[in-house]
Image 1 (cartoon, rainbow over the protein chains, first blue to last red):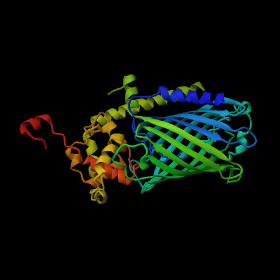
Image 2: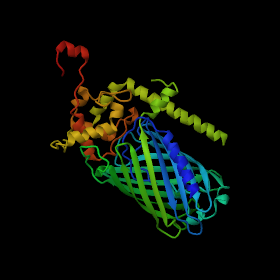
Image 3: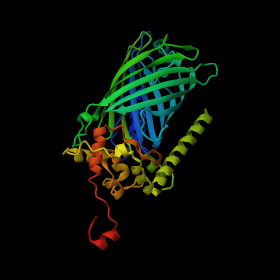
Image 4: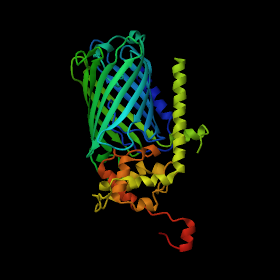
Length: 296
Length: 149
């Protein structure tokens, strides 16, 4: 347990040192795996911390955590850095790798369906258990071996997703097909999906600032899983999850999310209990630009 | 490994510089931003605000403005380095439907995000609030006429 909290403490401290004077109130979706088509506001930095507590048959349960720094480079480009780690109970706590994610809005205005291109580079070891995306033939037993053996295998991977999303009458519907590839030439492309729907509990804003107003809560549902690999497409030996999710957006700029994910077949972890906290800071780019002597 | 880190660092640096440059460019071309309002389709321009008679709409819209818009447009809508003033005839004289359309679609290439993630009702509340902002009068004009427009 000590190691579990050591990781939490480290990531929590990283969040704390990034505290900046101004903030925007976030209007964040409850999704943890699925993406809608909304990007970070330009110049804003969102600092996010997420946890996944997973059950593991044939091994020890685990707690995986990641820190996410999401920056709105422009209104059509958001870039993010992820730092991943995990604690496997009765085993060890380790840093498992980093990810660099970029999302590009493809169309200037809102359309019937709004596409965003997602490109990610991952450098991680096989002990990474954040399960931010499930793809190919990822199954629960892949995560059963101890950290000592899993961390020996390193992977450089790319992920490509097409984020399709639409908001109508307060409902957001998002569909994310994905393809991922280990950069080793002998490995095939792997495929997966994530689908989500969400809606605020109230569509009109109340006149007063309030923490517990219904419009501050957004409820949703996610479904995600693998679709096999290029040489073995299909649902055999794949895992799938169904996850209700709730986001609570506070006027102070903080967002809390909770999402229990339930495995839908025998290849899936029975439970992935996820939660996260994030805060958005406006004007980060401007502040940094001044520090770097940028043009004003 | 070192190459990857170097390339990544360089690209991240370029990202920040690009973002800063884009914000600066926006500040220099504020007039062009108002032209977007005229691009609203006629069907949308003619839409009436369904919250026209809602007594709380202005207050709620003001709250939403503080939360989502004031950072760039200024606390009174007077404009800032990143976004133009809303206290101008182009905005105050625009039909509610055009303002709603602009909020929904943003002006992505000039740095204004799309706000369709706010439910329709909240966007209409914002429109109601925006229409309560006063048009800024240039000082010289104000002193010569002795009244605000």
